[in-house]
Each structure stands twice: as structure tokens, then as C-alpha cells.
Image 1: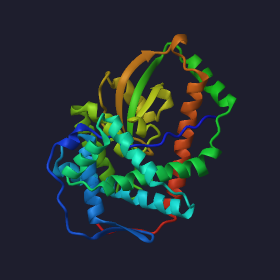
Image 2: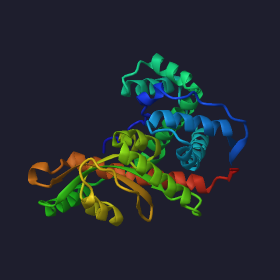
Image 3: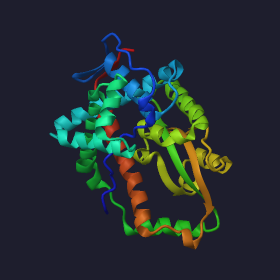
Image 4: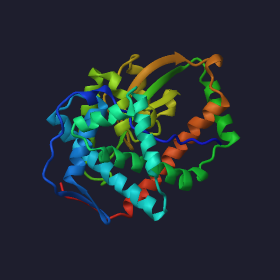
Length: 315
């Protein structure tokens, strides 16, 4: 099977060039992750970066709802970098610089202008440097430790195609999604629910921002492609999602859909009836199955690391 993991890069949007410069706050430790810490300035800097890169209108209400999720992101990155250190996985400065260039190219911004815009917003280059480094390190870990165990057999592909043959004439949906898993702590899930509702409300008013928001927040396999999961039947999704898909119109963003795994925000891009002419190729089916399996496997890997870690949140 061909490589299924695309090196992640962060999307960046024109919102970077507007708004008020970030304000520095008082330094304090907001979380302990094994031998490392997350500081209040780390948290503030990442919130500022996300506000600039998603294009969502900044507000105290949105910031308050983002804070717990961003804290989780920073804790996850600490765990990933600690695992990279344990496995002696390194990311070179050249690779990180390529990440900067990729972000700039995605938004048709020259790299030097991009970096200057960050500084003008009061965002340290080290903030994005750290995020890119953690993403690239995790990509290498997944390719080294997880990817070799993911297999898609001819029987898997045949089964999927046979199922699609049986569904000729039924509706198929081209969907993007944002997936927010339930709280890692397994306790109060209110913060995740509140964030899902706030993002949904904002995206219903500003659906064009969906890909940018998905890249920053979604924990699904298609996150780095703007949440895109392609053409699916309702039956291929969680039961709760299957019920919602037929109620959406083209271009509509859904309210959060709660499932056993977490919350989904759906963006319906198109709808069609499956026919022999629109049947996917074996290669497409293999890629989709493989991506889903790789996504599940790397999530389990991260959750195992998370469970074995000492984590203390101080806010």
C-alpha cells in the first residue's frame, strides 16, 4: 500500500494582516506534562496564533471556549515531542523552514512577508516553529511505528466495492468534518461541547472558514485536508451522523452531532446518487480505508502515551 500519511502543515489566512497585536500576559505554569511544563505565555501565544489563522471573529467568549481545547493541544504536543526524544526522532531546522514556506505558499504569501505579518501581530515565530516541529515529529513517529502495521487487503477493497454496488441509486454525500473527541480526562465534557457549539455557530455564518478551522481543531483523518473526507454513504458514518446528513443542504454547516466518540461538525459540499459511472477506483478505496485505519491506530498510540503520562492542569 502506498504511503497514506501526508506531512501536515497549518493553514494561514488573510486575517493575519488585520487585528490588534497580541498582548503579553504574566508568566506562570498552567500545566505540568511529565518533566515539562506549559506556561501561560505558551497558551496565550497559541490562542493568538489560532485567532489569526482561522479567520473567526475574535471575542472573549470564543477565547474562553477555545482555552481548554488549546490547552489539550499543547499538552498533546509536549507528549509527542517527549516520545520523539525517546525514539531519537529529530526534525531539522531545514524541515521546519519548509513548513513555514508551505504555509505561506498555501495562502499565496511570500515567506518573508508571512513572517513579518506574524511579528506585526505580536506573535513570536517560535510559536509557529514549535507547532510545526511537533507536527513533523509526530508524522515521523507515525510513519516509523504505526504505518508499517496498517494493511489493506484485496478482500477489504472487494468488500467495500461490493457494498457500493449494492448501494447504486442511493444518495452519496461529499462531506468535510470537524471532529472533537470527548475530554481526555473522561470527566466533565462541557468544555468540548461548548467549543463545538461555538465553532458551529461561527461556521454557519462563515462556512468559507471551515477548512482553516478544521486544520486547527479537528482530530479526524482529513484534518490536514481541511476536514475533507470525500464521498460517503450515510451508512459509512456513525449512526448519529447518518441521521443528520439527509437534512443538510449543499453548502450548509451542521449543529454539533454528539456520538460515543465525540462531537462532529459537518459541512455538506455536494450530494449525488451513486451510479456505475461514479464508482471509485480500487486505488481510491484502498486510500480511504488505509487512511481511516491509520487514523485510528495513531489515535490509540497517542492515547496510550497520554495514559502513561503524569499530567497536572493548573487552570
